[in-house]
Amino acid sequence: DGGITQSPKYLFRKEGQNVTLSCEQNLNHDAMYWYRQDPGQGLRLIYYSQIVNDFQKGDIAEGYSVSREKKESFPLTVTSAQKNPTAFYLCASSSPYGREPNTEAFFGQGTRLTVV
Amino acid sequence: AQTVTQSQPEMSVQEAETVTLSCTYDTSESDYYLFWYKQPPSRQMILVIRQEAYKQQNATENRFSVNFQKAAKSFSLKISDSQLGDAAMYFCAYLLGGGGSRLTFGEGTQLTVNP
Image (cartoon, rainbow over all chains, first blue to last red; front, side):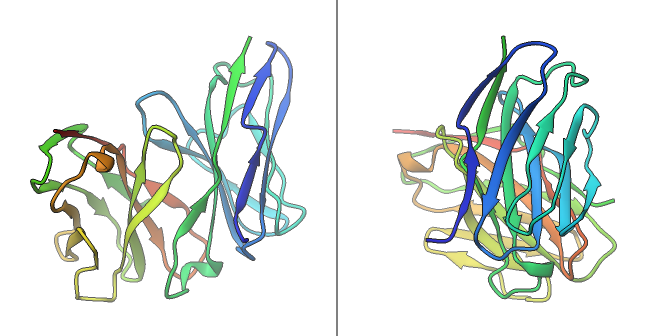
């Protein structure tokens, strides 16, 4: 079955450590996105990528980094520079170039990151 | 930059009644998509309905329908015959057609369905 997979579901990090969240899709989507969601809040865009080896900052990119070496994969690294990393992180992908008749964004199940 | 605004942080409806969630957006483009996503307590994002901007006809999906007013940049969601399972956070979202675009979400509306 095609879909988008995030791992792990729960992640604990000590202060000062970098941590990488995985996002993999087999939908042949060019576009991929990372969002942060705080309790009772909306989705804030961290980074997005429209094509391999290219990505753009979203609204809250500070303290985060990404790579897009393969079409299927868009990992997010939460660095020690992110002052308040505890949150729910969602990865999404969308149809190539947003022109498909059934264009929509597909989401992973999310990763809950907690700093301990 | 495109923005999406949901002015109702919370809404409630009686079971079997109808409720309308509001969404407005700002864009200078003519080719784009609009979506309503549902996020239940499981936090899984579920597509409720999609509207292509070039289509004048409002999208419908069973009990869910939209009122798409392109000139007014308004995209409201109507839920008819509300069910307890409709209780969730609802997000309005915008995606520019043709690629090279960020997928932008509104702040969300928390819908409560009362039995």
